[in-house]
Length: 69
Image (cartoon, rainbow, N blue to C red):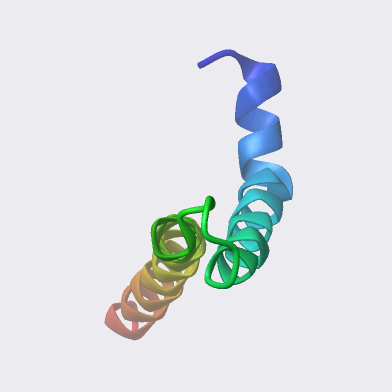
């Protein structure tokens, strides 16, 4: 992955795409030609993965800090 796409990926592009997928997915629940459930699952996967990774980084930092005592 080149640096341009990597910077967009790390600087919030993933959040924007995840939220957009959620919005279109909820609309898709009521419109018959859009796969709402699939888009909602993709949006949750994008958003959930980011927050889970940040939580793991925070836990790792706290563990390292605790072990240095």
